Image (cartoon, rainbow, N blue to C red; front, side):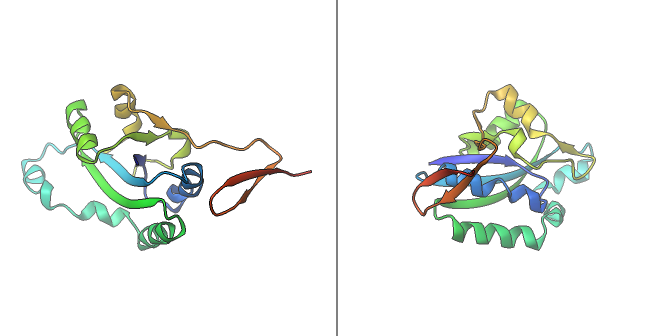
Length: 160
């Protein structure tokens, strides 16, 4: 089983990576953790209320949740899809976050749809790279190739 961290901005294009990722790992159970990182505020009031925060969930639209539910039905190898927010910018905190969620790898930045969603956003790839977290890359097909997907096997057929 793999638990893959997927940096996201919660846009519809954030979920485009799931189909090829699941097809590529069709024989393995996957837990997908969509995450956005924020710097901690300097405000004492914000820090005291941190555990009760929910305003960040406003960035996650209903369509995103619905598409996640559809993907879980479409791909039986998805054990769970989680939506998380991380607050902090230190390696120690981020490593604790990864251990708590049992993260085994991070989706390669070229396969993610990540952009800043507010002024406190942090790019998670910087912290993940410093920790040496293994990266998962979605394999791309050569030009002129198309995929014919069978239920258990991914086959490529040449288009002439």
